[in-house]
Image (tube, rainbow, N blue to C red; front, side, top):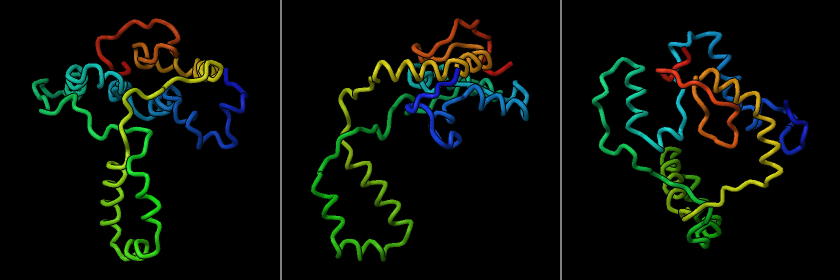
Amino acid sequence: GRSSSPLVRSKNEKDSYLAWGQYGYILTEYRRFFPAEQILILFFEDMISDPGRTIDEILGFLGIPGTFRPTNLGRRYHVGGTRTRLTWVKPFLGRTPVRLIWRRLPTHVKSGITWYYEMLMVKKDRRPDMSLDPELREVLRDYFREDVALLESLAGKQVPWSDLRHRKVEHSTTNNMA
């Protein structure tokens, strides 16, 4: 069931992260317009844990021989973090002369500078703390329970999020929705 907890509800649920996290319901809508054999369901965690097998699944789904292997398969780029490097830079950028120069730059130049700034200014976390408050975790588990069951049914396999798994699902021979 859906929780009425203020931790989970928003006034406009369409715009909430929770609504966008309801993959089962979202895929059900796609199924109204596309047959199951035209939809491949993969999980990001599968690409991280076994990128070669995931690429094979994608190629097989597309009917392409599974011989292609990118040379950088499995390499992670732009790994984020939560700590800021060079904390003195941000106040400096807000000073009037810098702002005047910034305003005169073309949009595409600003975009490139912003991208590099954001990549360089983040310190990668050695071990980010991904723990949730146990009470919040339980509220979220309850909120997504029905959707996880629906997603597992549509995918024909278990979701990789062990704390949200609904039940065991027989693995299908393909990972599409057939």
